[in-house]
Image: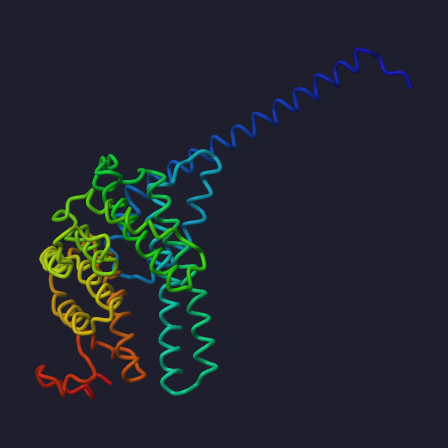
Length: 343
């Protein structure tokens, strides 16, 4: 069949028009997606994060982090930059697997105490699996922080323009420490660089200690107690942490107290752990409601430390409403306390 040149030309023009239309549509989708991503990120920074910080429901924060992180980060593919939000959502998402790892650690302690070897081994295996995921999430939070702001080095700090930037930076530094600790507890299964600890020690000094409830110096001092090679000459990490703990109590965010307890537990100093837990429980009257989530995270962490001590000694975790008490209080010099009232 012969086709006229005029008809062939019409088909070519039609094909070009269709291709051009398709390109316009695809470009339009990309613009819409990027705009959506930018709006979501700006909304998250301006509205969602402040709202979440005022909520003391750690489980809700955990679920929010796991649900929103993939959605938020997917907008990178269309040109949006979620790096200022990513450290926060990765950090709260890490609390989900951290809680699961703690449950397995307590199961391990109970099984070991009762001589159930196979269950103890199984619990330890599960604990390490969850610790690995936890370390991975914290590490991504730290990496996103440095991607956005860079690293503190040789006395040079990144430019942190707003309070939000300082908060993200501070959370990112704590996440870096947690990444190293959780990776170590999972037999270094991820191989997260240990030099992050030194970088965090320098980075925490880049924000004002008093403005942020004593957390910057508390973080540095906790590192000095666990890794003494990072401590400046003549530094007393426990005295510095004590100052930070007092500051946190006065300002209503008790994160330094949780850091103190974790550091003491890491070096096997049970007396300091007990003191930290007791003081934490006694100072719960003046919580800063604008940062209730951070204080709730501190309670989550310090309750975990308390549960470890209780379970190792009795096979049971801290009794409900009994944070700040210990199983042998009746036999100690502490005021008389009937533990049966809590059971």
